Image (cartoon, rainbow, N blue to C red; front, side, top):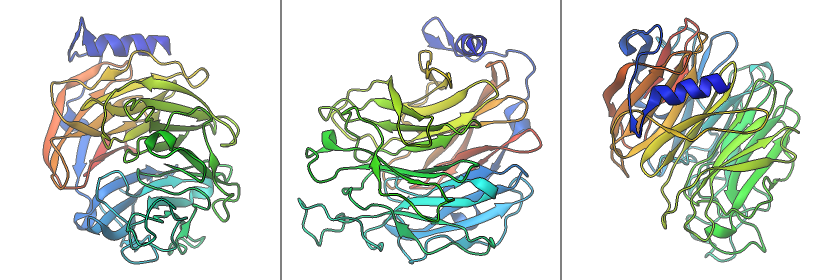
Length: 403
């Protein structure tokens, strides 16, 4: 692992400036990376690839504040997709505005498909009301919704709200699952008795031990009083050993918007954690994060100060080197995505130039198995407003980016 980290650091940084190098065998990005538009003009793609190489995709359609989620699958690495199935059982109960409150997707035991998302202002069933807000406020009682595909693989079950005692849902929730039937849905909010404001928010987890059939009442995931950045997203991930990870952004004193990494080795019952990357800003930056796993490390990517960073994480100690910025000199970088293929190559993708109701451009960098950047940066225009891109590794050893 230390060899991987040192090579990766050397490949990305020479002195204090970011440098692209060729370290070992290289393929041009155009030969390794295929760009695929989301079917039906959909937004906010979320993908997972199962052990048979089937690509599972969830995407958003509709108005930014009230729309629907759809699921498709592909057996040819995204060249063609199945007819869409609507995920949410109540029309208009999903939301795309803000670009971090949309659906997340996880594959669990037996290839089961699990989806979780922030409910729209019209979504039912409602979550617990915030007693500090008017009961008729569109943002009061927003639910953290979950569904799973039925055993026949023909439809999704009726959506369920998993918030029972926490309220003030804002930033994006997340879902992860393992091969033993455990399903985890996490979000951040407050409950009765918590201090007001973002400093009083915390990460909550609802756990299922029966493949999502039932969930226990949510509990706080992390004991430290970090707060949680209200409109920032989260990302959860289960590695090949069954350990659960989560990355969120804190809000101590309303200005310490630091990236925190959590890890649980007991199926989400308890977490240890560490501050991964500090950021002092008196605003909500609406950030997101991504995970992937190589043969030696857990990889995590996130945003800080309008840049995209990533680093390998030691799965035993949570140790990480100094975070590495994505190569190049682009600005307003957001929505990182990671994928690792069967050759140990890593693809980092992100968006530049987007904003509220404004689309942006897609950028990516390929790294070989030794951590060396391969050729130059890839770039393509055309990411729609309120959307982003998602990278995946194909069974053939290449990569695809859906946007």
